[in-house]
Length: 134
Image (cartoon, rainbow, N blue to C red; front, side, top):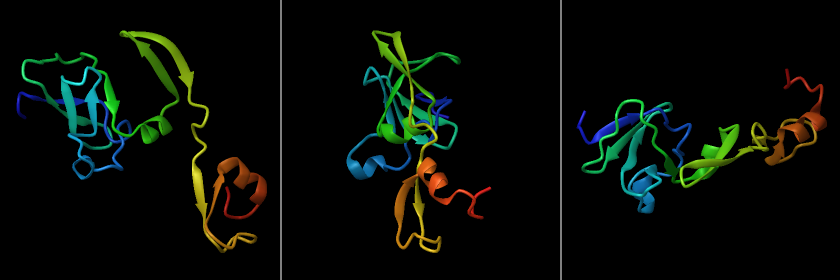
């Protein structure tokens, strides 16, 4: 691997993979919070490949902070958000909507004649006992 590349323990489950950076004029999937030390240029589910700025050489185990390009999916898979100011954690916010994904319900279930977005708890209330649930 090129010495200006680094592997991080954060991939598409952390950075959104639903936006192709080149298609929207972005350099990568995320950028270091200083805006200049690194850009996430490739990733798989668990790991990202970061192109490092010239002269920036983190050691194995160093922590790096990034801004993801699309925060929605990053937050969706997190239990908490750390609120950081000047490198110090100020607050820890729980993600209240964690696990409350919107489902697309297809026709074929009694009472649903079209695609209808429903929250999981609404779905369970409406169709409790229906055999499509465990």
